[in-house]
Image (cartoon, rainbow, N blue to C red):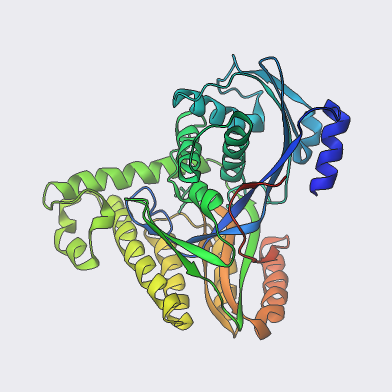
Length: 388
Ligand code: GLA
């Protein structure tokens, strides 16, 4: 893929000058969903799927962007003097947002860039194609401008740009996983403190399988922002009766003792999910350490129930995939992964059951939904980096 991208870059922009290549991965979250803006824990890992870029500095202030995934858009041209979001800018709002955020943080971009990108994360699948593009841009800027910025800062700047330039009030999980991923490890991240630990993911007799429902429901960003607002309101109500900073500070017992401070049943369910999911994530990380993969699977299943019933971010197609998965012998756990309202499920499947799993889900999902899902067997990869 990188060779084709280089060729494309040279054909579009010419082969001279200092041409460099970069990569930033997508992520799959094993457990800990919608906890990252609630001060809880998450447990994602970086994929080997991701976004590649080839880039070169320019002498003027022009920005040229090209994506092999959106060929019909051709080269989208802009300028460092025009770092404002717009509909015409389409996908380039993500890299432009990161450039805007670098400048906001005092890192001035003194010259423009030619950039070509190409990715193998299916768009809108909940595997963080946009976070990977943000982190990728951060790595390009760090390298080409020589900025003294850490990978954690690049993740934070990516999140800042998504919140303030692109209008999605996301947490830090996706950008953190893309920036900080480590081969064969998941990241156990406390989103309140940004303390993190790498946990080996060596399942020996099982595989992590992602199933793409290939549906994405509309209004995802606004529904996401609604959930965030509901959780924040519930936190404010709880703070009137208990001394906490985030929902992640509460155990299940403490939540049950104080939940009546939340004056609305929907908000109560949202907060319940945030509290219980955080505790499940802490337990799941311990279970993985203890090699108790069965417990890990049960926690994944409980996470799905909670996302479906209490947080209400699943959808019919995803529930069909999860229900089908739960019935296949050799499936240890299965749940929705990512922001929700479509996208993907993540399942842990015994090696000998993987074929039956994909065959059954493909046939039955096709019957019920009318199109086939897609499967990816996960290889846990490294975080974002310069390639050459
Ligand atoms: C999206 C957001 C993340 C996180 C997940 C849900 O992927 O970008 O910050 O909130 O949804 O866990």
